[in-house]
Image 1 (spheres, rainbow, N blue to C red):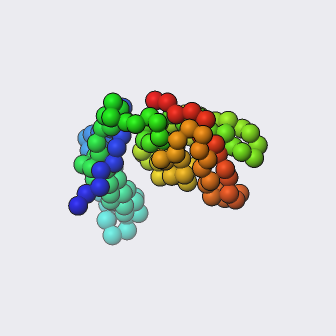
Image 2 (image 1 turned 180 degrees about the vertical axis):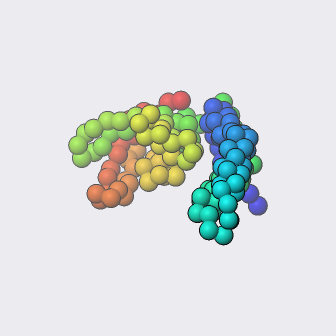
Image 3 (image 1 turned 90 degrees about the vertical axis):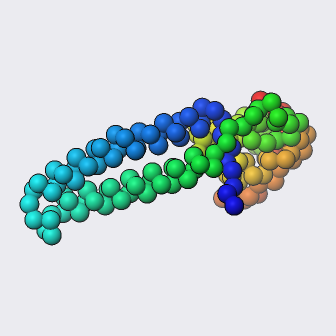
Length: 157
């Protein structure tokens, strides 16, 4: 039984584009590297050939994992999201109760997370702690520095 992972339309397109790139240009480039290394002589003592074969194995592993991610990926229908509670694709304004610092995060799938862009994974400690909360509620999140308490100030799209 497969478990679905939900993405934005752009996020899923990025994953599919990366997979296509690896399958075409990535494999072609890898085949060239192996052929060049093979042309350099005795394969039993050819470190360049061994390295190229190892790199090929890693490329195929990455392709396989990406194919698995894409096969279980679904695009989120934003019209069906309840914006009264924190869920995936919610833009959440929170305030740290200790230092009163306010930040805004958008909760996204793990592969779409980008902290610099304010996009955090629903699987991150903060993301998990915020899920299901409503405006005015508090989320207590265990961070490396200890327990952090956030107040949910606003939830938008």
